[in-house]
Image 1 (tube, rainbow, N blue to C red):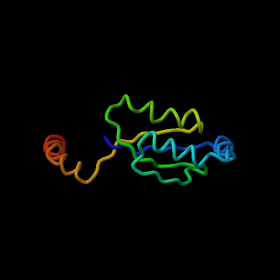
Image 2: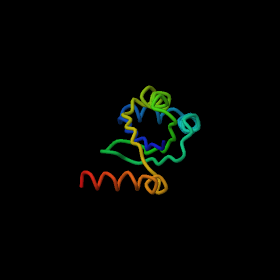
Image 3: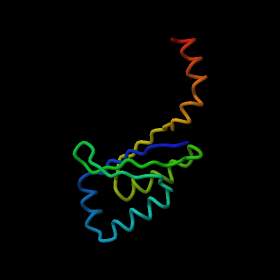
Image 4: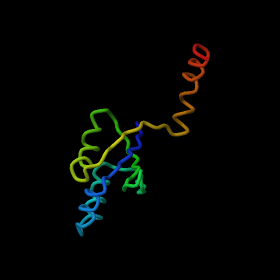
Length: 103
């Protein structure tokens, strides 16, 4: 199942990580290791951050994906399940049933 990770990196931890001349190489390796489908770097509430798209086959995949960000960057990580347009189309009957029963 596709998830978007919201990764918020505290200022001090981000500053320390960026002082490492290998930062870019390490980030590239981490993104490859977690098989990121896309990664977008930005600011979040005045801190460094990223939105990273990953495909998790099971909930048990989350620690292997999130722990490197916790340990290396002291980041806050939020995993949000998301749907593609095709997934949303498949959900149509369940949405219709919910509307019929609860709407």
